[in-house]
Length: 379
Image 1 (cartoon, rainbow, N blue to C red):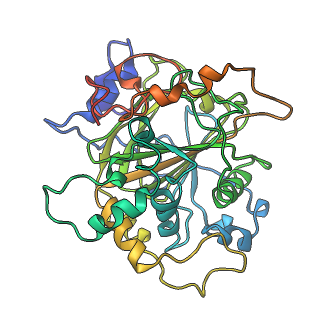
Image 2 (image 1 turned 60 degrees about the horizontal axis):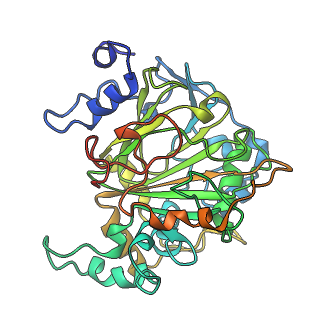
């Protein structure tokens, strides 16, 4: 760790929290020189080039979900973090737009669950996109009320995470999107995890002042399978620690299109997002849709994004970030423990405006997202 960052964590106790507060600080702003940027490749230090399996996924299969051929991916590991892989934007130019649209238009729709369901009726949250699109295409000024889309903080897919009991349940489940499973299946196969089953996903929607508190993703019953993270829109600082809060974390940039795979010892390590940052111009340019269906292979899960839809998406991601984490919940032969009906839908009573409260304390499990280190309910 560089001298500047090391000085932040001297003292030992809860080194992660100290680093989180350092990068979250607004006045004065932190120095970002010690933040690892994988766009520069394995330029010494902790970043090491990683080999993937080009034979695991055919070129056409990769292109069907908007990915480059595996041999063209730039993958890296981090010294001191076994099981962690970082893939620097493996998406074909123009294909990120499809995934952004899915995250904004398709995945928040019923029967999936979102934070707005906590305090609004089903009829009010039935068509989040349709109720938001016009105002995002035709903004009336800075004092315009936030649309439902801009109020989104999280969406759950597949097995819906129970924020109260911090568990999944067989009784709270909807069909997992087939195209998102296809994407996750190909990425994990290339990283050495054939047969990965996408059973749950949590989508986090970050505004420019949002953050994700310190936490460990441990609620899944099977930890032998990786946690897959996809980032779209504005950039973020991601902190990757160790199995203990006292372990000093490594700070790295996550840009649009970047993918992280956390497996093995890294599967149960502490991590957090203290800050959202404007995307570099070269990263933002990859978000623009290609505008042509002729380049898509037969059977492609990726569809062209209309100009009308992209007008909404581009307006949203000008100052926002979407993160998708895909998980396999159950291992081979595993089943859920029995639950009482009252515990299954306990999440309906939980805070609507946050995701994890790791920044405010607590060492285990998922937490609601914190927009302020001192006030976890502010987003």
